[in-house]
Length: 521
Image (cartoon, rainbow, N blue to C red):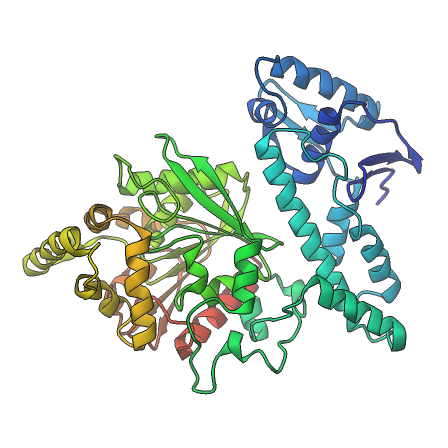
């Protein structure tokens, strides 16, 4: 297919038509606007573009109109307008347009590339993305540009990895690429995952993307005793440095913290209680799982309102607010279609979102979840026990005595070792306040999406531990049975949240991987 129009984003922005370079507007803001439209490849509201590039007391709307007029003279052809705009939105039509960084990303999905092609990619990626356009907009623009440059740096590392191990490279050339790769990625650690596990986060054509682990990677994969230590390993510390944290605003004004890491197709995780965007990486629960996903996907997660880095002092801590937080994050990032991961109460939030936005959810992954909370299903005796636990939580959660928090840790992870339980006790206190901990328990009790189950259109997989001490297996099975054609996978574990060194963790990832691969998600 002909690509007469070429946009170069690596290095200084350039546009060519049939090999002839075109003159761009002198305005840095106009050029940055073009780059933003080209690179994001989605429609943007005019108000959002004004916020990104123009400050008051200027006339942002007039400045936007002027810039679009100048840019149309560069990229539009009489028979093919490229900048499409109406009263509300602006979009760059990139069909049949060559875009260097995008084309490199598409080619890197192929397993085998020639040495010549990889060397050409390296020369391109060795330039600074949108060189000279830093600071052309406001703080949000600069944050976006930093994130895009980080993704370009990750692509450069991948090209170097392939060059260092290419079958046609040997001798001094091989040593050069190996040295450059080591300089770009000193840790060179990689979780040892099976091909089916890789499918959990990578389309089929991305198999073989990741480097193999080194023989000395026991610190990342586990000790000889068969369990991994808690804390930040080299790989997770690198992930913590690479993740990008930003904030969006929910409908009621609550600030929601979200993080993105990795590159590739997006995978969005709905928030659940007991998460923290920064501390999760040292977790025996989340750390390895998140690191595995982030190697092959643009992995997005956020802290629930009332915990983590999101606002703690909130008036509304309800199921409806939880769903609106998920909507705010997906809208903020302009996600069009993506698989959605829900864990524990995040499953109900994911189900509700999938019913409200069927066009955006390509698949549902539901782990340790339930469709109705304890206020709907529990016996009077169980409800009384839950009320008592809520009262104990509010008075004891923030104390140095971990006995109060053991109520949760022992039911969340009954088979975890002493070290993991001690970590979880401290983690609970870091994630939220005593008052909010009690409010969360109350809110979860009111959840009820049972009538929504039959309305789910997305392919769905439900996974649940057989002997879950927190949410019984029958609740997970009931949730799966209510969703049309949902796949149900029981896991041999007693843990509500799987610990990364138990066999069920790998079984879980393999099942999810096969599901996504079979469904082409």
